Image (tube, rainbow, N blue to C red; front, side, top):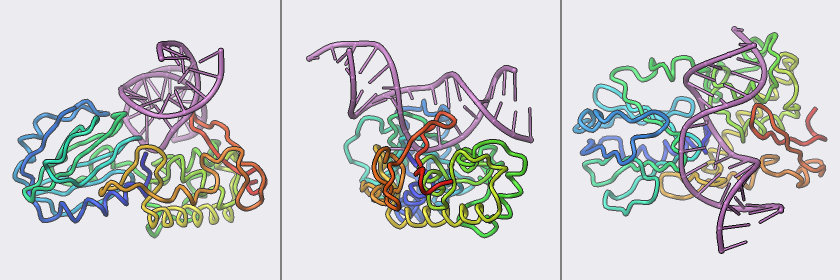
Amino acid sequence: MPELPEVETTRRGIRPALVGSRVEAFVVREPRLRWRIDRGLVRELAGRSVHDVRRRAKYLLVDLDGGSLILHLGMSGSLRVLDRATALLPHDHYDLVMDSGRCLRFNDPRRFGSLHWVAGDALSHPLLATLGPEPLAAGFDADYLVAKARRRKVAVKTFLMDQKIVVGVGNIYASEALFRAGVSPRRAAGRVGADRYAAIVKGIRAVLREAIRQGGTTLRDYVSADGTPGYFRQKLFVYERTGEPCRRCGRPIRQFVQGQRSTYYCPGCQT
DNA sequence: ATGGGCACCTGGCTGC
DNA sequence: TGCAGCCAGGTGCCCA
């Protein structure tokens, strides 16, 4: 499911219920996620207090005494804050039970999500160490993208989804940002000029900010921490709108496959 | 280094 | 109705 706006929405939703509370128990029902959850965590986590809940790229970092949990939602994962006694649903794989009586419950039908524990600095974990810049932070600009794209032949849409280039942009928001920038997703990354990269940076920032404001995009599985869906789907210009008229020029939206992922674009607005 | 393809997994939908 | 086939918000890894 989740790209940056959905992960950020989840962070904002779960943070108030966790910070300042202590982990009473960590319960694993299905350890076979993307990587097997270490059973030693059941002992490791109990008794530790939560200091903060941060986001890096599409990862959530739950800072505890002496270390951090690194959570990923994969394609179909979601986190909810519930009363600890709430009845289980299929694919509820683990709970972080807090001493407040609330619990953080992870549901993930496809099990592409993950959970790691790092003692010490979470950002030095191998999964996070090589990530590119945050798109909403200073320093992510046209000059940066131009430099990174030099001599690169990959399509610009695939380039923008590379988490070493910029983090948080997945299949929905890559298509949406390129539509806003008026750039064809097929264009080679190294053949996109500085002016177009400036428009792409603007497009990425705008679409991510607007999506966060709407609580993210719900297509299938995603729900925020209180169980509500995201409402940005209604604001999408191209994603999953094949054959429907472009909201700007009226021509039918087209779909094709790039790097085994569907790309959506307007043949009139994007060149 | 770069680009391309596969794998991991379940569920929902389509079409025969 | 049943079932095969296809598709889905991600990303690590292997190969050329």
